[in-house]
Length: 272
Image (cartoon, rainbow, N blue to C red; front, side, top):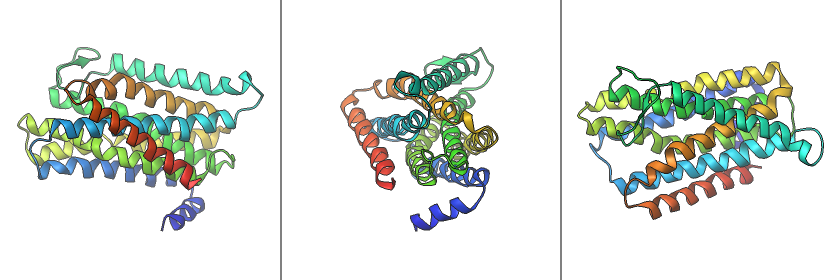
C-alpha cells in the first residue's frame, strides 16, 4: 500500500502532492483533537510523554529529512558545502523568533503569554501558538515534494512520504495538547475539537507555498530545507521541551523524546 502511495505521488504535480500530504497531517491533528469527545482531562504524565515524543520526531525530522539532504545537495567541498544549510537554518530560526515576538499567543501551560499585547481570549491565543508551530511542518513537506519533482537526487518522493508520516504521527499528540486545555477551561467538546484541529489548517497552506517556491526556483531548495529545519528546532527548544519540564515527569518526557527520535530515524532510513 505504501509503495502504491509513493508511485501515485510520483505521477501527480508536486503542489497537489504537497496539498494531499499536508491535508493528511492536518487530519491527524484533528484525530488527536477528537480525544476531547472521550475525556475531559488527560493525565499530565501521559501528556508530557507525548509532548516529548513530538519533540523527538521534530528534531530527528529536522536532521534526517531536512538538514542532511540540504547539505548533500549543496555544491562545493568541506565547509563551503555546509554554508547554504547554515544560512537557511539560521534564517528559519530567526523567522520563528520574529513571529514568536510579534504574534500574540499563549503557551500550552496557559500561564505564559507572548507577542504583542492583544485583547484575544486565552483560547484564541493557545490556538495561535500551535498554529505558529505548524508553519514549518507544512513548509518542510511542501519543500520536499517540490525538490523531488525538480529531479534533485537528495530530495525523493520516498523521503517526502517518510517526512509526512513522521509529522502526521507527532501531530496526533499535538492535537490533544491543544484541545484538552480548552476542554479543561470549560469549553464544550465540539468547540474544543474545532479549535484544536483548526491549529493545523495552516499546514496545507504552508505546504503548497513550499512546493511552489521550490518548483519555480530550484536553487532555493537547500536553503528552504534548512529553513524549515531551523524553524522546527526553534519550536522544539523554545516551546515543547520547556513545557515537558513543568511537572515532575521529566524522565517520561525524555524517554518519549528518545522514542520519537528513533521512530523518525527508522522511518527515514527504512524507507530509504
